[in-house]
Amino acid sequence: MADLKKGARITGATRDKLATDLKKKYEKGASIRALAESTGRSYGFVHRVLSESGVTLRGRGGATRTKKK
Image (cartoon, helix red, strand yellow):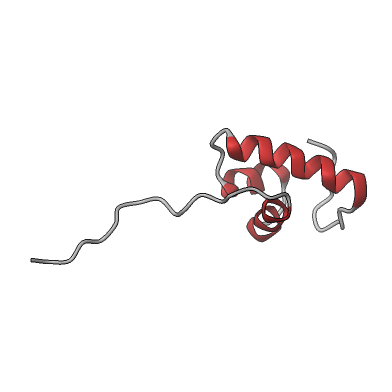
């Protein structure tokens, strides 16, 4: 990834490139948390960038609860 300073505002072409990279990795199966860790950005930032780029976000994982019989 590009040299993104923590907390630096990312706009324009840099943000578009980052959004494209994140979108590709997310669609290949990477989690938002993993992407946030690899870029040094927050979960919320990565979530927002993915949403802005039109990605259909996956649902949460884990077991679902069922009603007791």
